[in-house]
Each structure stands twice: as C-alpha cells, then as structure tokens.
Image (cartoon, rainbow over all chains, first blue to last red; front, side, top):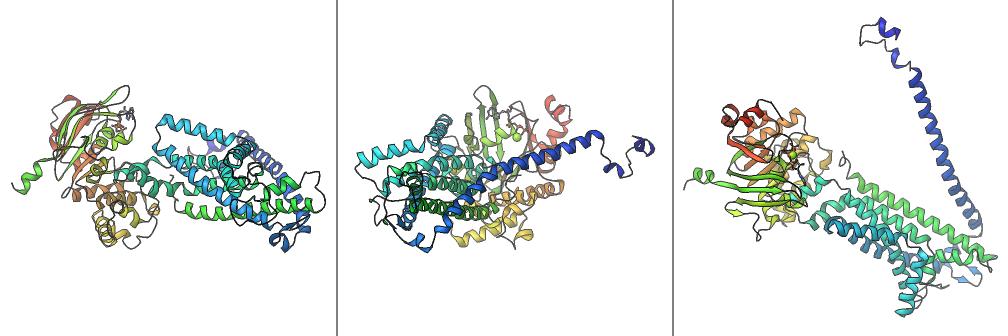
Length: 305
Length: 257
Ligand SMILES: Nc1ncnc2c1ncn2[C@@H]1O[C@H](COP(=O)(O)OP(=O)(O)OP(=O)(O)O)[C@@H](O)[C@H]1O
Ligand SMILES: [Mg+2]
C-alpha cells in the first residue's frame, strides 16, 4: 500500500508484479498443492497398470519364441498361431459389423430421428452397453449356435462380439455428430445440400477423428472379452479355413488356461503369452488410431473457436 | 418490356407472412416486396424477429423444429411454401450468408466448389466458377494462389468473404445476409460492406443489420421491424430522414434498441 501511495495513481514501480500479497500467496500455494495432489492421484492410477504390464511381460517373455507366433498349439506345448488368426478374423469381422451398425445408428439418431425417438435410441444404446458380456455370450449361444444350428463358429463369435462392440461405436458417433458446430449444418443446407449430403460431406469429416477413437475403444474391449466368444466361437487348437469352424481366440486362451485346475506348466505360459500378445495388439492399434485420428483432426484446426 | 422495368418487378414478395413458435407469435402479418438488383436493409432492435424473417425467405426456417409459417413468400411469382416446391431448389436460388463465417474444414477450393459438387458440375466448369466467384468476392488477388490451403487458416474477414464466394458459386438470384459483419473487425467489415455495392448490380440483396450506419451506407431501401411487425418500409433516405412512424423515429434516434 505504501508504494501505491508514493507513486502517482496507476503507475507502479514494476516491483508490484513480484510482491504477492498474503492472500494471493496463499492462493498460489494452494494451486501448487492441488497440482501435487493430482500428480499423486495420477501415479496411484498408473502404478497398477505398470505393475500389471511388468507382471505379464515377466511371465510371458521368457517362454516366448518365434514359434509362439507361427506354431499351432500341440498338447500342452506349441504356439498361439491359431488363436492369433482367430482373434484377427473375429475381431475384424466384429469391428466391421459394429462400425456398420453403430455409425448408421449414430447418423440416424443425430440427424434423422425425431427428438423423442432419439432419446429412446440413446437410452437403448446405453442399456446395450450395460448388458454384461456373458449375457450376450449366452444370447449368441442360444440364438446362433443352437437355434440357428451354426454350432461353435467364427461367424457366431464375430456377430456376438460385434453386437457387444456396437453401442460404443454408436455412442461416440452420436456424440461426435451432435457436437459438430450448428453453423456447419446451416451453411451446408443453405447451399442446397440434402441432409445425407451434409452428413457425408461435412459432418462425418468433422466427426471422424472422434469416431475413430470410439472404434478403437470398442476394438480394445472386443479384444479383451472372452465371455461373448467362449460360448459362440468355442475353441480350436488349429487355424481355421472357414468361418463355420470353432475358432480359438487369445482372450479365450487366457480365460481357459490361466485359472484352471489343469493350469500348470506350459498351459499357464500360454495364458501369459496370450495376455502379452493382446496387450501388444491393443498398444499397436492405439498408436495407429492415434496417428490416423491426429491426421484427420489437423484438418479441423480453427473450427471450434 | 425493357430491362429496367423487369428489374422493378419484385423478385421476392412476402405476403401476409406470420411465424409461430409453439407458445407465441414471432412474426405478424408481414407484407413486403423486394425489387430485383437492389440492396434492402432490415433493421430493428434485438429480438424483433429479423433473423426469423430472413430465414423464412429461403426456407432455412424449415430446419428449426417447432416453428410454423403462414402466408406466402413468392419468388418470381411462385410461392416457395407451396407443397410442390422443393426447399433444396429454393436454397439454390436464394443463397444465405450467416453472422459468423461458417467455412467447412476443407481447402479454400473445395469450400467454393461445395455447392457445385452437389450439382455434379464438371471439374472444368468448377475450376472456372471457383475463380470467378473468388474474384467477385474480392478474394482472388489475396488467396488465388493458395487454393489448396485449409480455409480455416484464413482470417475471419477472409473467411466471411469466402462464404460469400461459396454462396455466389451456385449462381443464386437472391442473397440473404444475417448481420454479415457483426463478428468482424472494422476493416474486415468494411471490405465485406464494399462488396455489396458490387453485388447489387447482379443480385437481389437483403441484409439484416443492427448497425444503422451500415444500413444507411449500403441499402437503397430499408425495412424497420419491431416486435415481429413491419413498422415501416421505404427508401433508406426517407426512412432515416423523414420517418413516417413515431416508432421508427424513436429507434433511429437511439431512444431504444
Ligand atoms: N425456435 C424458436 N422458438 C421459440 N422462439 C423463438 C425461436 N426462434 C426465435 N424465437 C424468438 O423469436 C424472437 C425473434 O428472434 P430473432 O432471432 O428472429 O430476433 P433478431 O431480431 O434476429 O434478434 P437479434 O438482433 O438479437 O439477432 C425472439 O424473441 C426469440 O426469442
Ligand atoms: Mg438475429
């Protein structure tokens, strides 16, 4: 206060920028404390993740070889080639199904549906996302494996897993489309675009990076879930040559071979190897999706201002 | 009939137009004729219905759920609210530029070409039209050499003029502007304003503005809306200097709004 009195009104000596008052200083200390607390919370969250990564790698890597990727499982030994193949086939098909259904439903909800229908559709999407995976597994089992008579098959697995993944794609598509700036829609329609042309040429371009993230999220979940596949795709120690054979997947390997009375020796090793491979696939997928969605997001720079 | 006479026939005429929201009336029984190749200003205090009114003129109002339109808007005699009329075709003839620039996240070129692509225009023609539209919007000199650049990297004023070029590209007859300069800095606003003098020669231009000086500068006729009603419409000079209505007088002398 004395400086202010000495200097003409409104003109300080510059030192005032450095001398924080007691109250301001307390506030700054508080800000810093919050920063540390958040960092600690972050560490608490990350620790189990790194611990898990270490635990899986430490158990998997010593028993892995090139053969893990290329050989069939034989007895208690061999590799995971059939399950890697099965995972790619089933998750690939399931993703195609989930993207088709989820993106279409998202387009419908955000652009075409009357408000009351849109509200119902969103509730239905959330409900489906909340259905336990094992329930979907049984559903696929009774409907496809038994009732339709397909037996355990890659196709039954892919459809069940695809339905499991759909609500995640649907929700992100809906949210991404709904958060496109309103002016974009107005501008497109004012230029004579029909709603589907606005969606295809403008809105989807803006929503794409977010939709991709949603698709990745759904794929990561799909890669890790054994429940929808255990009763639908079944298991197979051999690679498949058609979609109607029982098909092994990495997630089912983990489920079957890890905490199983027969889990000893190489069975347990196979479970760890499958877990390790799943993690590697998810990480690889994450990096790829991140790069791709960053590329698309760059086009949007300056859109939200 | 000579050209002058053809132009004085109204291109757009609004007949007993009312717009209703679920619980209230937004516009009441507005009738007004917009002559061809001219700039008409629409002024009025905030909330009086200017945006609602201009959006009825190209059926953009259809895109707001819950509003009901009564009366007629005739484009060269055809009521655009007739059941047989396709709103998409209406909007191709009656273009619109908004308050904030709404460029798409695409290149400058693709922005201007947007409407043409919807019409499946041949690429050769597209190129030519893009060039002509940018020139008309006074942008060719500034950005003609970097058409591949993302349009979102342009300044706000350039983006707004790009939106005008984009609207021009599909060759509308009427251009609607809803406060086209209110989000721009004075210099950018002036550049957009200068365009109106250009555009009046070929288009029927209707501009909503809350800037009375702007209306006085660019519009040869001005309409004053108040609480959803058309209070006065006439040559700009008369409306500003010898208003017939007391409400108009009070508004232009800044007693409200
Ligand atoms: N969809 C709608 N539902 C209900 N009321 C609406 C709707 N759109 C506009 N209104 C109301 O109609 C009136 C006119 O709105 P409008 O946006 O046309 O005014 P304006 O003259 O453009 O105002 P401003 O100068 O602030 O832009 C306002 O009172 C507004 O609240
Ligand atoms: Mg308005």
